[in-house]
Length: 266
Image 1 (cartoon, rainbow, N blue to C red):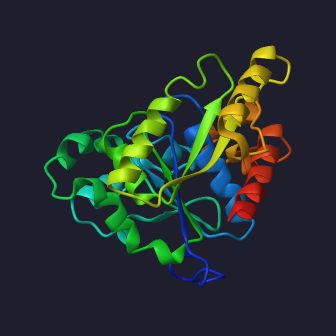
Image 2: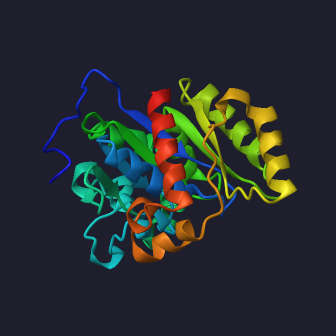
Image 3: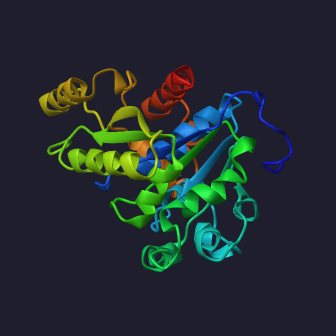
């Protein structure tokens, strides 16, 4: 079934575009995009996942065969391919994706030559926005032009923070970038939520980081915490969200809980 076959259940509710962002790598961005979107899809929300990371981990996490793609997000941004032509099905009924391949790595340089280059992603997503309840953008682990495009296209940010040393290092830089984009390019931009990931309840460090993040971000921090979980790490190699790979695992249960919390926030 294509993404256009059924309009959203509630056409009066505005689509929420959320950039999942942290310029540190390995904090659980792609894991969160894949598993949160799958859990929302299960709860009958229509979701579009936009892979904006040249590593393409979100695309792989949904088992998308990158070699077989005719077009991807690079072609949408730089070759005038309509966003709708790049949308593919995933293994989750209500979740669709615009995948990324390694050719996206060249986009940073090529976007520089475009007029209105910071708005490229926003413009292409407008044409498909009405068909979805949520659009998640998986950002690259840097603050380059692709990430700026995500900040301009998004209504709100979801920031995963891993419960390890130096967890908040770099987040201040991200917040500076957010403020700059908010002042100059996207006055509506806000933080949707901060998500603690890779939490290990046995360690004092995890607890200390959680306290520090809660102190810093207050009510923005989701109550749901994503634990360190082997099944979460294994699922991408099978090209499945953890809700399909190991439904009773702690990782799957936590993302199902997170989806409910996301829905409650709007």
